[in-house]
Length: 86
Image 1: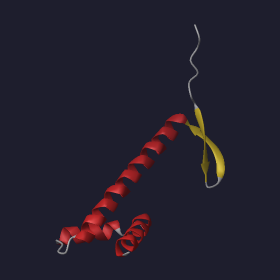
Image 2 (image 1 turned 90 degrees about the vertical axis):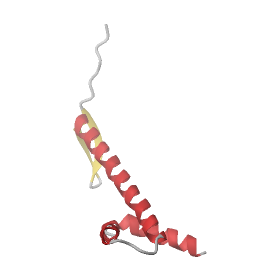
Image 3 (image 1 turned 120 degrees about the vertical axis):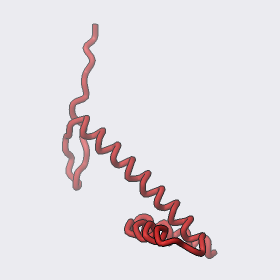
Image 4 (image 1 turned 135 degrees about the vertical axis):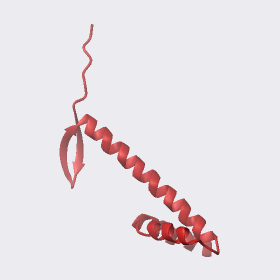
């Protein structure tokens, strides 16, 4: 019977340096990164909807201001607005 090898360390780059971290920590970081990307995409989609509307409630304005704190969302909107203007 073969003994299964358990993954214990994973090589990652942190600030340009290669480090070994526990596999469980690596999986947690990967999951959190995915969740953050999904959150940013949802905010980006909301920002597109916000730009299409003419009137906004106070809550919508607050959420839009929160969206604009993300540099990637600002950049995506600038690109999107340039394409729409053309």
